[in-house]
Length: 202
Image 1 (tube, rainbow, N blue to C red):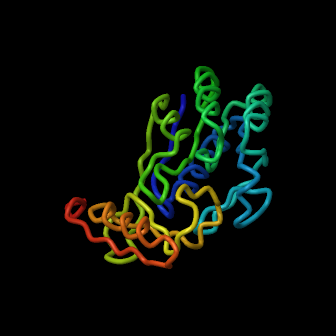
Image 2 (cartoon, helix red, strand yellow):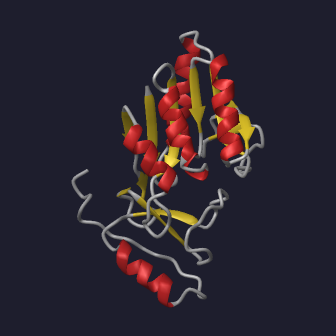
Image 3 (cartoon, helix red, strand yellow):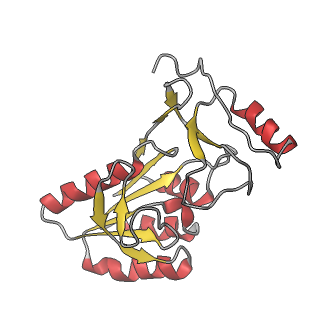
């Protein structure tokens, strides 16, 4: 079974991943959780949520060698967890889909980058998933549910840095217009505020 936990920054993806892995531990299953080596935000050898939950992890490079290590070590475990799945190459989704035929696989992954473009690996994971857990964050401007994120300062147009201090979770309805601000004044810091009528009834 392949479970994909997805959503924007600060939506609780890692918290949900840890919760599901800990339940499998209570059930007596052999579990392992992997994280990409570029994620050094809280602790180099553990998966840690924004609210402080922590679980020991195996650190692997976010490349094909890391994917090969995950698949080769999987024979020793009943349950495999992956945090920050979007940082791995798309082949991760193909390999986890194979593992999920016999094992429980739980992956947390960002849905979109700050431009609103989907991560390729996340797209493939979602296509293979037996279960999708789609989470929302909270808009820092109006307090409503948020499905996207926006950068407060501009740099790369496809952000792959896991140290997300410049990222805020944001609402969707004026997302496109905010991106035009970024693209026309990319050298200037900005803060994108969002309002939403789409999510008012959530």
